[in-house]
Length: 335
Image 1 (cartoon, rainbow, N blue to C red):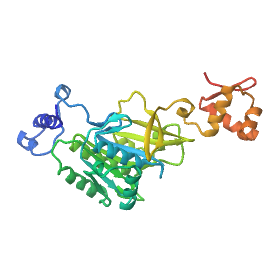
Image 2: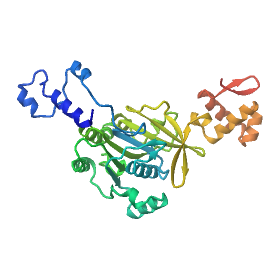
Image 3: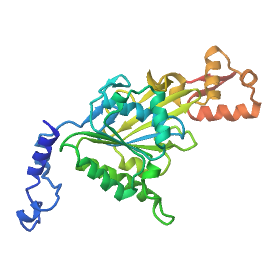
Image 4: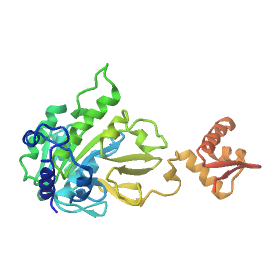
């Protein structure tokens, strides 16, 4: 069943007035998302739209990472792959109309980056680039106007770089959670209005590296509460980790290793080993020493160049995370 057919089915169901409505005629004239629960569960409904399964699904996806890490490069790579029905992370993309709001990078940098990734003009033809765009609700209305220029029911991809440039600046006296939530909700409501629309919004992580990658997203939980999905790029030591998830995530795993190659990103496989535990380089060195047979604090301190007091603090921290255990003659790995 096509998206247009589903919308027609839903519109037909909406003609049944909710309890307490004055009359059927008045309920027809206003937007209504009221259903009897039995009608909803028996209704035929299309599966969610994926432009590239499982990474880019309909709705709002936050693409998050530290500044200058390569998030925009990742989205440029995706845009070209979608525009040419090529592969992105070894998955074939569905070609759809693309609107790319480059509010951080200007024309000169965007041109340079496309050349760096050896993108041909034929591969870029049809990707609409905008370097200025209104903020907040006015900006969302213009996105709505753009959606009106493509055939009704057609899936589409909108990239917003970045959330900070697109949103209305938070007020000093407002509730931070509510303002974050409402910022993303404007885009989430747009996606509900146009089934099949995928909106990718670039944002930043904090300086800290918490155990839970979602906690690294800058701002309050209002952002992730309103968003449908997230792709979080993290740097851990010399490795890059992609943490994915959300309402429509359907992968068998949620963590992958990324590599920078030839002006872009490649997926190297699932995130494995000590890196999967979010270790610092020093913690990873300690794990490697314990695996090789080192046990005593003195030996570990000498090999890592740490003082006894600094090492003691490090080992207690690793112990609290369940990474190591105290044994009679020093330290050992958890089973």
